[in-house]
Image (cartoon, rainbow, N blue to C red; front, side, top):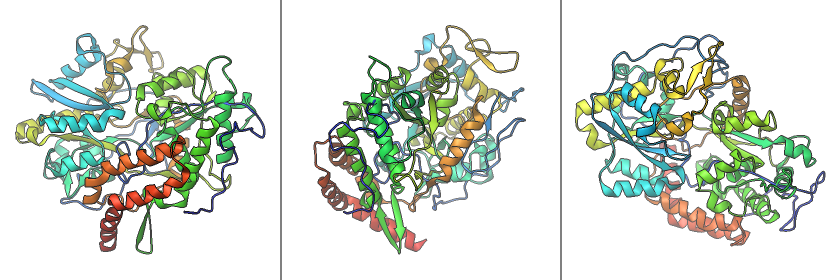
Length: 559
């Protein structure tokens, strides 16, 4: 398919020469998912149109003095400092003893074992149960989920992505439909759950059923960062102005030795940062475009072809780590490149860069402005990059159908969810973020948390803390974070099929995801020619893509 995009300027395999510098290196993060319609790891799109019952009633969470309230919907309210007084929102211990098993996503190493973990022990005491967690890395999630499902012994709580496997499990009845339990004012029995926005509940509504409590994220989760100090050293005083200059910078970061003898790279993982970056710069559609009653998938667009062509040339020029394909699923390894300061460009959740005590926050603080936020440019230097808007839901905290058969057990699990959803400024929220007073943090004279020397709360929390607490931005750079994220949201678009369901997608999604890896991954690293992109499109259409299209078009025409 021909396209109207200007080809990137850097060379086809030969080391590229910047018009301002002739050297290079790089870096990357966040294993994103391929554009296969409903890929594992994608945040759930907004605007779900189907619901069997009214969504749960929305009650806005409290806002405390000093709040930075964004003008752009989907950007979290932020605070430059900790609320001075904490409110208790749950007066009784929610659990009734016993064990609650969780299946949890993680992007880091496992939590410190319970026997040596003060935070986990304290959480169990506050919840009134023993929380047992199976931590699953994002890169291994689909395989581990399939194995768990095949075994038939589902934990009480399972964190679902919107992958084909998860959607199929929902349809097969593996999880509890909470629509009758939480619809309308029924949710007020669990008041912290009523703080969940309506569009987030709708994103968890599939085939008329409400399948759990959303994993809360901003409408545009990501923030991009680059090593400004390296760029300046290599002859790039300003952020890159277009796709060609971005490639020049990434190659320079790999080959220009900005850290002397210590090896560095422009990008480290594919997919992930590389796709997020190229899709944004070339304005690859958010899964589909809809014009004249017809849907065109993103992979059929000229923008997609231009983005992949850019990546092919970037790989040939040496702008990516040579193990980028393996690193795409090896979360710990590619995150380590950021921590070890060996990567020139990264993308991750905005909060991870801004929280002073997070892994990435420590890197940002240590580099003191050198690891700078930026919004990628449009491919041609005149247009703006375009990102993917969501409802602010990364996944679903689902309850197994077996656990929900016992109504008392279901109510207990929802009470636990309610405690974990304590809003910003609550005692419940504070404990999950900072632990008990004196264990990991104390309050300084200004009321801000001060880390206790020799402690590592991140290691103790691991994945145990992930996915149930509300998104909260409380850090000194809150205003900068809100400003950058607001612009990202302004430059993002929703998918026209958001919230629609496709039986073919559920059945063929995993196969189509693998097809992407078979063709596009290999095209990018040079194992297949760029011309094979048309073979990929034909295979995608014949193996389910056209059927998915027809099912979505029928729903759009009937809406």
